Image (tube, rainbow, N blue to C red; front, side, top):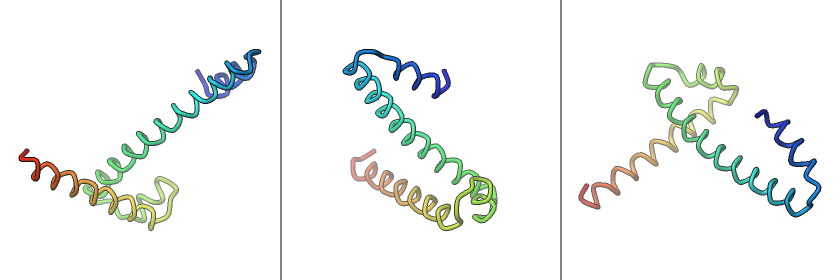
Length: 92
């Protein structure tokens, strides 16, 4: 269902408490979706970079700055390093 339809349906809810709960749930779902999309975007950036794409080309493709592409790539590298070190420290 398109987001506009979801919002319209929620806003027609006559019960104020029910409307507030539905909106709260929608916000929670949107936050989870944003987090998951961010993770997957970082994966796609790594894949594009590994495939030889230049940072400026990735930035143009996604409509973000080259600095943001670099920041995302560096953040994901740091996160991956921490995860590997954590696994090594746990004997995995």
